[in-house]
Image (cartoon, rainbow over all chains, first blue to last red):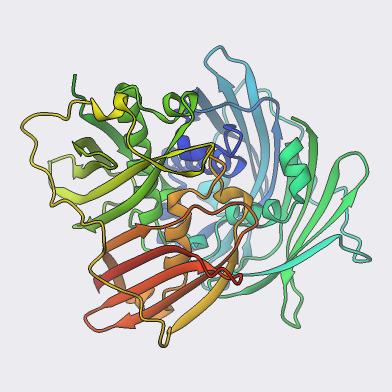
Length: 250
Length: 250
């Protein structure tokens, strides 16, 4: 059986930013919540996987913001799996207003890891067997390799963060939204004051944990684009996240 | 006319901490949201005040956690003003479970500032005139001066933070919950892993803004108590917040 998840959320005050727009972090949290609920319907929720020694890991997420909702506005978040492969499951999101105006959409790719081995495994049969909804129009599937790179040459901005308690989720690793907070906090003040995020493309590489020391870097490019990279600041220098954000006048 | 605000919230995944308990930050955000809605009913919402050149400022907040709700649980947040004085308005909160079990409660004290002067003013007449609900049992009123002090002698923990974009609210100053995040992030790992917050008493002293440099300090005392202090790390050393947290085995 196939399931399409639809959740209705009314934007709360603390979910908005200094300009009264729905914050990207709050929106990503709501999308994550709807994805969780959809997974529970399918019998592939966090708890279902944990009981069999597995966990979900987000690998790619590309969010496009078409129009920002504001305080008190009611939105619907719609999400469903679009296809299942040997290693990956793809999930789309649509965020619409009361009158069905498309506010945002996102494509995402997920994989499953073994809790014991802490490494990626082929999707277990009970996940591979799931039925995706029929007659859905899916967003273009994300490639496994991003079509952008972080050239280490000259980052325009660099800072370090220590992973704190409030970034840790029930999987005991950093939640996907905390990384976005760190990289958006590193964006220059003028851009945050005069622009809005139009699109963000995220490539998750490694999980991180409470107390880890991370380095957040970014390079401003032409056409209102920033390339972001997060890695471990210890000698391993292990890659954590690569991202590209695109901005427009707000 | 008097208004009692009651909001029903179902705990979302990202509102819980690494142990699956409702996070204190998420709870404070929900309480703030209910207070906003109650203020709107009274015609004293943020926008109502802003139109007349005023803003709300939280002065004291004492939260007691009796029992932590968990993912998927539905809670009711109930809030109403309990009394109005020349300079202060007092507001209580109760958080209850489906079966009316008391999960948390809080007393709070608010003042009004002039946006132009950036300083406290006597409550304008349209606020002073409001009717508090009859037949309510209010929590003990908070004193203007806290019954604890931060002795500057030897802080057990000290760190600095720079106020970031996501801590700024529509009043263009740091939202009340961000301070709590900073001071709880400074609590030692062992306590966070083995204890839960039983009570937190917050005394807000000055507003802060985007880019400000703050110093977060704490002193661990006997009986599972921590005294916290936030001040400006520049030469002004101006006081921002004083707090006391009490912990218990979880």
